[in-house]
Image (cartoon, rainbow, N blue to C red):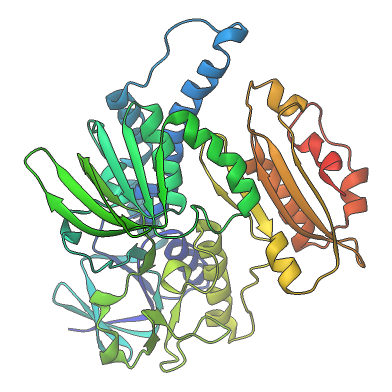
Length: 449
């Protein structure tokens, strides 16, 4: 017997939950499907557990920096206890989420969903028919098409390690590589990063990333840029990672190889062709309302849509847009302006808006203030040698175009610049703001040109 719904949602992460709650509150009959524990990537195997591990290693780093400034004792990472602490956050999530859905009257299905028609799906032998379908299935590691790819561990494996391997190689140079290398190195592992591009963290300003690279050197993280991994081989003692760089062959022995080379929408298991859902370059083809261009029944949000930055708040924003369009017809489009991002290295790096290179390419006339400022109070009181900023202001409007920060508290301070961009606050507005002092935000007026 086919169950009938107003909305069927594939996934149980931030986008799925936001949309489910909104439309269910409007009286719609809703079902939600996931073949993994309910809760999604961020809460279970992404942002939240990662940040818990970062907090532990950041505490260690702070103690080490303050060792000659009044903090005494031998502080170290107890990996099993840190992992146990992390699990106090992740373990309760699936049960909590299922209870929320139950209380709201949202039907739950465990298993892999696949389309069997334009508005019907099957999960574990059960047929579901819906007036609308929301794909919020998240993302998965991109295929690298290299020999030995099956030996790559995902970021999820790292976030659930009972014991930390002595040697770790990360393939790729984005957020995962930067953050995990800092965690692992501070916990005692020897870490190598292979990045095929010119530098790591390419989504951040190049000069600001260069300032951050001092921390990689201090930690002894071996960052190999312009190095393309060609094969991974199982050995008697672990793995051998073979790469080429500048025409030379490199081989590094390791105990664990982690995939950190990008993610793509998790769509393969859905059998989209049976629902006439078109894709292009492994991405859904969507209109401005996050609706499939070929099957108007279907919408997408978050990493499955990949219309905006791959960030949890963006997924929730997408879901709000989709819910509004479902309930009242297509009228709302996502707004991705002024969305900040941060890589939780120690210290963190953060950015919002456009970079200096982008501004010059677009021919925008702008004022800029850029400074490496380890002698500022914010850095000195934390004994942190890495602190700097680059802020761009439009010459004509005096509005903030972009902000690029590295150092203590920048993952919080960047939100002020994001607020300015999104709500068109001028540099004068920020300069006249009275911030609590001394805080990271109280530096903002001195960062403006």
